[in-house]
Length: 355
Ligand code: SF4
Image (cartoon, rainbow, N blue to C red; front, side, top):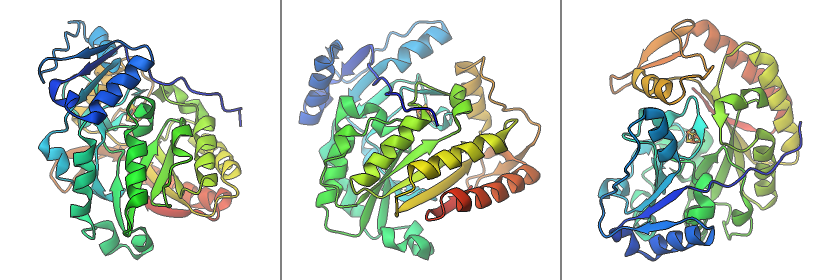
């Protein structure tokens, strides 16, 4: 495995803070952190975000990806949604991500230009958590995960570690779970490695970090993220700090040579996590919707990520929408490979699900 080189933290070009966000200590603290990093901060007199993005789509995408808006999470964000199979409930600290993954799942779920919004009303979000205690959807049907208690996933609409140096939101949430004397687990998954602020928190083992990983040759699909070796090193550091950890192998991409690429990745992960007792694995194959494909092809017109019809089948979700997944033969080959190779390289790890 190549040596882990440090990733550069994201420094947005613009930080906009709405008037309502400035009413929160946390909103003002984010503004001050950004200024401390030398980023100009625009304190807005109102709540409307006048982005003034260029007309050219590529330039608008680039400008949006360099913009952080600090806003108040709308009331709907305080009504948590179930998010199986990852966790019982979704808790959002932010929406959007500064990285440039050719398959990004946010392309199908977020509307408008891809700016990142960080939420200033963190106390409201933390106060909403107990309303969902014991209301688990995973734990009620999976004895294998009963020990986790009620689970809350913080990575559905963002990569919270990518923003942590600017927001401090993830640290605050981990500390809140550490203080919460109840059977609960905060979960987050990340393609970044800057875990230093998290290592000394009083987490009480109630937060599980997963590193979202893909083989180093697929780094071309994951622009702006930390190198995979750095992510694994960060995860090992978190395990040494007493956190339960895991791997999200996602999305699994059946590109030419995938067996060798994922075999090497799993061997590297096994070496990095050899001493870790509590490690889970989540296995998620690449999929897309017609909507996400159109957005991704507009954002990344030169991407080599295959989103053609060959080797794919249409699948209807329980809500009636369409997604494209690998065909049965490809799925079978992938699944039997991962079953064998995970057992070989990560024998102590517990596979939570395959999808
Ligand atoms: Fe999307 Fe995750 Fe990549 Fe961010 S790191 S661009 S959220 S896939």
